[in-house]
Image: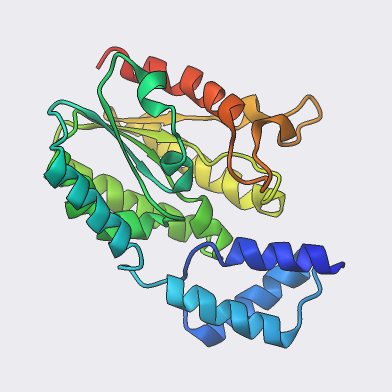
Length: 254
């Protein structure tokens, strides 16, 4: 494997954290490299494991959460809003207010969040807004940080349980993990995670699963390059147009 692919894997793995020990992380990183036929030195493995371990701290995004609180203090959010939260694909949705108009929405996506990070900050970034509905995109970073689909789904169920307990009657709309160029090596895990949520949604009246997978593929079944920015991970305006078409109908009649 070439150096570029090795570097890319390191970047993907370093986007978020993992609860395992550094030794366990080293084993997982090495296994992932072997799985994807990527050459990676022991020094790179060690460096990545230390980095992931640092990012695993639940309060890693406290600075971003504090900024939200400052914004809310300066300009209190309106009542009866729809809350969008999760990881960077929510955070980078710059046209969200216009896309979801006339609904009142609030963007509280942050960093390269794991679901566990959102759970940790639930009482700061979710509950205070008392939203009439929540739109959630998260989980891709969890999988990239070597959590299994089952572990990631377990964190999601905790998030959903917190909503049912603290915000009873609030609808949760989940945008499924999207296919990406940067993380094609995780397609199997991403589909498994999406499937777990879609099955749960069939049993829960207040849980809706929105799949963005097929609409973001080419005719050849590959992630469509025209929908992504340069990193091949985050989507561009054209990508958000697809998301808007799929998500907006779910919130129009709330």
